[in-house]
Amino acid sequence: MITGELKSQVDKIWETFWSGGISNPLSVIEQFTYLLFIRRLDERQLLEEKKANTVGIPIQNALFTPAQKELRWSSFKNKDPESMFELFTKPSVDGMTVFDHMKQVGHTAGIFADFMKNANFIIATPKLLDQVVQLIDAIDMKDRDTKGDLYEYMLSKIASAGTNGQFRTPRHIIRMMVDMVKPKKDDIICDPSAGTAGFLVTASEYYRENHNDWFLDKDFRDHFNNEMFNGIEIDDTMVRIGAMNLQLHGIDSPNLTKGNALGESMADIRDQYSLILANPPFKGALDYDVVEGSVLKMVKSKRTELLFLALMLRMLKTGGRCAVIVPDGVLFGSSKAHKQIRQEIIENHKLDAVISMPSGVFKPYAGVSTAVLFFTKTGTGGTDKVWFYDMEADGYSLDDKRSPVKDNDIPEILSRYHSMENEQARARTEKSFLVPFDEIKENDWDLSINRYKEIVYEEIEYDPPATIISDIETLDKQREEALTALKEMLQ
Image (tube, rainbow, N blue to C red; front, side, top):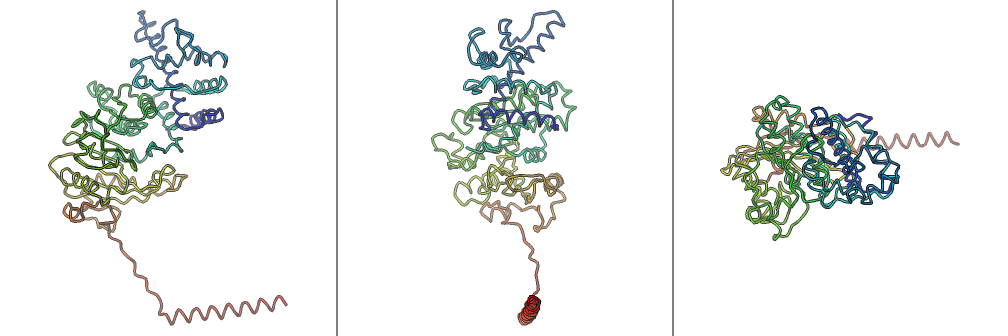
């Protein structure tokens, strides 16, 4: 849980960047991430030096040579602003700057270091650099939870970065999805549109909170650290932010791939994952020639929200599960491609649940209505009854402010979903209910909840027209009498 002090420290860093001329939210977070990484490099070196001194052996896994001492956080943070800035902008030590060293340090420093090729240092003044370095240095980052909370709070400030689909999925919605699928001990988890890696991070926290005893098992720890978490992301900035988010949450070796998940270069990723958690980009379109052939064979479309559903079916192992956010149009779209992908999931695999969410969930980024689909890849069908839930509140106001409110359907969603035996006889006038396969098929594979929900209309009896007219005449007479009395008082 993030503390008020930590929030205050992050807020101050954010305000300092903005007053220093860096106002794009993603640029702020990226520059903050670079400096955070540079600090972590020095902390890792200090730890290695401490180990070496304790046992009296040469340092292992050195990230800095003795000659590169001035490039270390513990050294340059004490210099005057001009000298510090020169170390970042003018190659000096071994022909490198602090930033150059960060870019070439290599995989030994963790997954983040693998994605530094196009990184740019844009802090323009010695004063701004010194201010931000001192503020970051003041943060106590010894605890993994603190480091993770710090970065998540910084990411929560991306309030104006909702361009090109790059907006942040609300963490409580991610948590709901993770709690519904209950990740298993041997799961291999993937997000094919990883962004800031929120789904992977939340899944990792699920294990720590619910199955901390599993970490006593070496095989599980190895699986957790090296195989369990996988992500694909096309954007350079987002993949770096996601990599740092995973590292700060204690996952040093996730399998992150920079690239287009729908492209030919990813064609060999099939039947590989047991759990997919995602909020892929939607309202976008791709030309057929940039989409891998097997995806188009499943759904002939240019719309990313449909293509990603086909991609996820390809990527899942048989028996693998998926929880994915889609725009409402996927549920009821009448195009051939819309019907094609819905039929594929419902008829050839197992659709488990559809949660319709209110349109304000993604504000202030977007006002589009969305839903969460839960399905299992079988290849042989298996859809019997589909569970629908009509979410009306998620614990926050549905306007741009998204302030905490009392109304919240999420606890009930989790309770009902994990007690499915109690849902069998639930009436369709309620928030949740089951719909059989045959009825969905008869409705052209339509998955919109309004197609199946029954609305109870309350009958209201009104007085006869003659009585209403008489009442109006009485009111008019009383109004005239009151007006006459008022006029007499004013004479």
